[in-house]
Image (cartoon, rainbow, N blue to C red):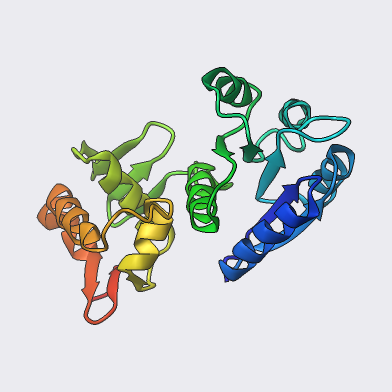
Length: 229
């Protein structure tokens, strides 16, 4: 189960229902609010992992609610995706400037919605991930975005860095290529699973002989990060 909670704020019940069905099928918990006032209260009470917010609503608009959520300390870090029928560039920019992490223009497919939602959740750094991690002299420091081996800096690409960060914070568990795509690439449905193999190979090469044994192939499944043979 994803166990992630998404709050849908939209005055149209049919839209909320369509989104809720798509998200529940993708293993998300769903909360619903029909206006900005209820949505604000639910955001404070339930601390959802992400808010899907309709731009145009009677009374307080979605853009006003987005600004309010970003102003208040309790909800400032909460990711927001704006749902809008507005396709003009300036409106999209206005939404992003209000603090939204992404926007989706109606009409949209449930598949696109889930993919965009996963991407935003991946970019939202969970608490604790800012801390450095060290395994057998291999150290990853998110604050400086550096990877070192016994104090010596390693040259590592951005995708390989994200892969390594995920592995080092999720040790001793085997992940399929599909799961790694979902976690590291943010649910990008256009990336082929074999792309994972290419980046695993690059990651091992970057880690060198000292640490490449930590990234292990699990036959018939995928990969794991482990200090055990």
